Picture (cartoon, rainbow, N blue to C red):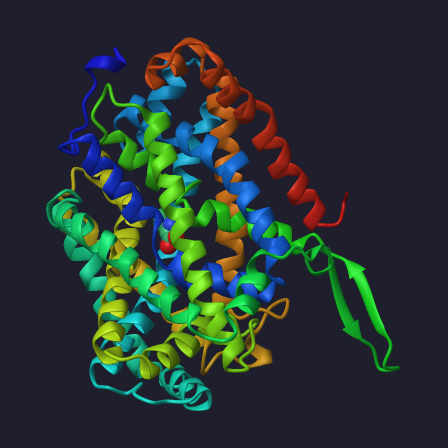
Length: 471
Ligand code: PHE
């Protein structure tokens, strides 16, 4: 019986700790590094609105479903799916969901660790006072200086991967609980300070409008000025796909990370209210990051579409100019590294838990194995910004980093999420989901089930077909 099942990996000591861990997983580079730059590349306001709709209509219901599955199965995602397939008398093919998650996790961690490595490098730069009084040009040059040195990026990538392996090896509950209890709130406060600084800039309104003023033209069209000097615009569904993919990425959905955390969740606690808090916290952090960054972009005449380097090319200007900037700058990048750390841990936990369950491995070698494989793959991303950045090394105009990012965030995670929605909404019995959610069969449950069965899958499919131009 599901009620008696317990996880061999242990359980979070309380509901509060589960929430912190899940928020630790959700809040990471996705919120502070990725959200601002993809919002910048895709024209701002309308993109942000599409993203927020994806979070509310797709992300939140699927997060409830993913936690539910994990807690009911109480095993690594691969085995959880196996157990549930048996229990619900479903087709065995659904177990592929767990496998998909393992592969997606490897791919994501490989580049995640490289970007977290950039943040690590910036901790030391900030502490050394490198940003004091710098102007926009210097900051861009400093960033490019880091990227053009594969050796040092590789070293930072290695350090970050080792940090991740160490915590995962010790068991997620150990070091992580304390880290998330204090560091997440601290990051939040620091973001508020940065937004405060941004408000003092003349360009705050411009930054605010960029993020929240709707300009659908930019989300639905790409315009190019042809050789004749005439601007030609055509429809594209890609920004919507990017917004959808990011909703999954930022909430850690679609690959088993939230599922495995759900499997350590104490029984009898409300999944619905936990989801609400996690989703709200994640969204607020992303919006604060955007509010801090875009005024700096406009005040310094920088390019909102600067790409993956955006935060590294803007925030140092703010730290360089504010009083106490050396201290705040160092603290900010330290906290960013911690946010990335608590996310990276959740990315490999599903695979490590599975190795422990099925292959009798202890956590230490299991974590080492997964970390080392992802580290190797990460070398591709390290080189995507220097030796392999040239066009001759690109596929569809994308570097290896771009390809892995595109494949995971925009395709694999939404597909994984779609399967989670379909399995929980259509395959799992109503009685099982009611029981596991601990809800009454009232309006709340019915709304959730309706969203999960119809709205989320349909929206995902529409955005997919839209992006490949079939609709
Ligand atoms: N949600 C994390 C972030 O926003 C990234 C992540 C993706 C974590 C997938 C786990 C699984 O940075």
